[in-house]
Image (tube, rainbow, N blue to C red; front, side):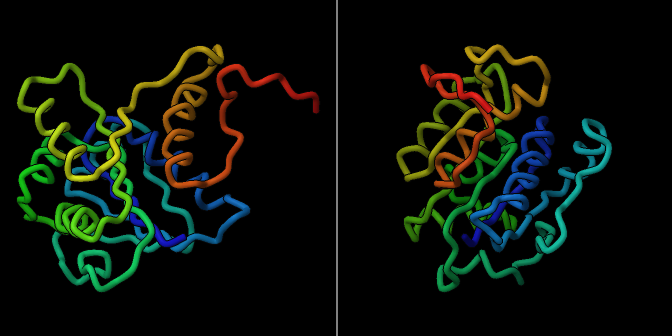
Length: 189
């Protein structure tokens, strides 16, 4: 699979870190992964998790140059995930304000009818933010808010993070066993 994983300066760097780890270890891979970092992504990651670790072989790009393959509709990609996604990023996507490589890429994925998954990490929302979410949904994006599940009785922060990452992987059609699914019987190892 050929993917763009964009990481913005929203809180929730652990979601991005975990997604990168799982994609790198995926036995269905190797995946071609381009990691796009917004201006504040590394700064927020440093405050939250220490250092964002990009797996070996994943290509890393900044957000200021349009000299990246995923900003053109002529280059084929399977999906783009923006995780975590700031509400400012959602707003710029919703209104076609392509002022950076991440926003331009999201615009391209929408116009080319490619899978765009947005994982907003903000609460509460104001009315403008709610309308921007509706706008990106109407434009064809999939929105998976970073809201963890609790029915599997999580014991660690990573257990909670995995419930959100698992949903992203499901929408990417990447098989995983990160979490117990609702009403799924316990398996014996």
